[in-house]
Image 1 (cartoon, protein in one colour):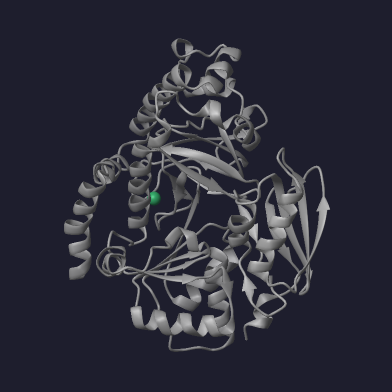
Image 2 (tube, rainbow, N blue to C red; image 1 turned 60 degrees about the vertical axis):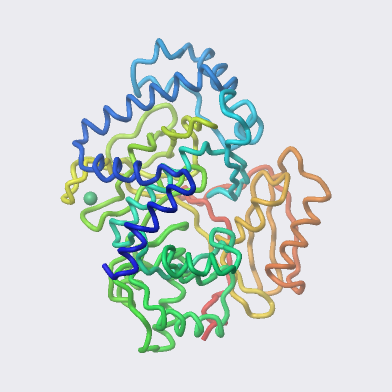
Length: 458
Ligand SMILES: [Zn+2]
């Protein structure tokens, strides 16, 4: 630990917490301890939190009260998590149509924090968090970060495709905060050019981060670039955390080979924050089980250990707008047995996940498909679902499922946004469909490109 990191963790973070009234340090202490509880104790904690959540949702959220009445599953009849399957699955469309009725009436709207997502299935979504959930989310992210050597104040290189996630105003105060506390070098990978990659190398060499936190596709492309260009003088971190997109085994091997350090993959989403991450030992990802209750289902039945099914998430700690049995659109499998790291947190394997190819613009920039889900899908009203297909460098097919408030303005806004992100020479063609199918593997591909991005970066 260097001096600044020590100051960040033990001096600045408590000050920030006090100033913001944030409870994240309390949650963090709790999660640091609870991860080593036995599997049974963690499961008991989940049952308790589940019961509390359902009791709250029944009393305060008209949407859930109606659902629970229909299922004859009132809180007094709820005997445990095995009863949960009597409740209908919560779809994105349910949230799009009934979001208001899902917000708890005992929370003031001013106290809720709005958020939105392009989602892993290309469908936009608006939702709210209560304040305490914001703090527990922060804490569980720090807890999982620490497994990969990323602590409060650790010097981090962030190769990220969503500028809005890290966009402080460049004031003296934010600069100071970046230097002493956040300690992140943000490299925007939403669009990549040759010149940008070579600048990334220089900036990382200068900043020398201990950890890289990266969109899986972005760090993979960066690794391939370093390899193909036979770059020798580049900074190697101690570990790399990949996130936001599916990481294939071959991508992982190449990244580990080029940077000479382990990759820790993680799985999460904007709706629930971190869901699971690797600990560096054994197989699979440990689920953040104190904050989320996960189900893996095939139709009406729960999966066996190791069997792949749809992932349903119940957020145990967001009381402002509960998400109960939320079908997130990914597939995965629960894993049996214990992990050699000693944590009692259950493990899973991620099978699906968002697959996004890079797109190449007519002016030769390489644009992250994962970024486009945020810049395009999340902000344009009336998109039920979307998929981008690039067949040639100048032509992009936009495949759309119309949502309820789709209108002429939606197309216009897509055109404006696309011109901003991809340049005005990209020719857009629209195709309207009833449904966008997943690949035969069950994976959803938001962007598909037949153009190899590396050709434009070497
Ligand atoms: Zn482990």
